[in-house]
Every structure is written in C-alpha cells, then in structure tokens.
Length: 38
Image (cartoon, rainbow, N blue to C red; front, side):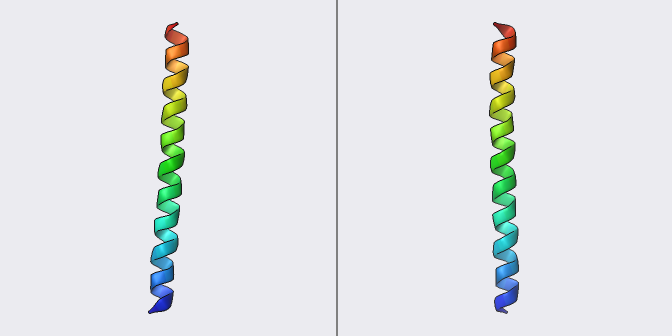
C-alpha cells in the first residue's frame, strides 16, 4: 500500500518537473521569436 503511494508520488513529481521544463522552453522560444522579429 505504502509502495503504491510512493510510486504515485514519484510519478506526479516527474510529471510536474516535465511540465516546468516544457514551460521554460516555451518561454525561451517566445523570447527568441521576439528578438527575431526585432
């Protein structure tokens, strides 16, 4: 039971990290687009 809970927590942790990384990349891409248009 505890192991299953830990597995879920780890999975949630990884999903959160991945989403944060994706968000950072999107922000960087937008920044580059703005620079390119200038």
